[in-house]
Length: 125
Image (cartoon, rainbow, N blue to C red; front, side, top):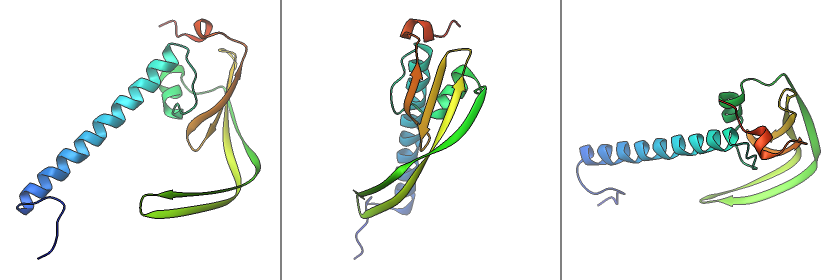
């Protein structure tokens, strides 16, 4: 007898898969909304997604890339390990009308530069 993750008929397994996918999409949508809310409140924190800035502030006035220093990274992700050696590429987005320059690594906010306070960055809409 073969072990299966979800007992029952194939129809039940498909239903369970559908429910799991729906729950995953709902969690992703909640995280995206939380990112947009943080940006609207002027709260910049590492890990905010690039797309959230586009959704709230629009496209940046200028963009460019920069390369970081050499680095080595290794880790374990469940059933497989990974190893990276090289230079990381960062996306830099400039919003001069807001007085903010953002630096993204792998699609999420890594760091930023601004002289503005949270209340000054808060969206006026």
